Image (cartoon, rainbow, N blue to C red; front, side, top):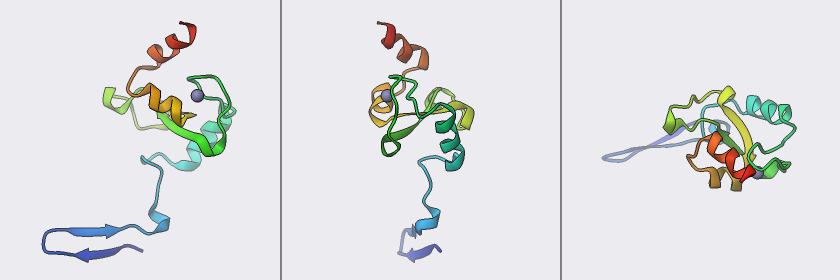
Length: 98
Ligand SMILES: [Zn+2]
């Protein structure tokens, strides 16, 4: 249920619990399957990701024209995702061998 509060200039929509979604429109169950596919291994640091520390990463950042599609999404640690920012995967993986 969505309740709308009208003010003179704005309509404030308060989402209820069932409307809360992951940060983008990717189906969350699809994302969990993706996590299982890669055995909860972070592709950036190659270590296992605790389920409560998982972050959804766009392999090709949306800003760089990446699709908001499950094929363009892998799980990472929140910290790794933060460190990656908008670098490309190629750049990020080059840090490993550096
Ligand atoms: Zn990591």
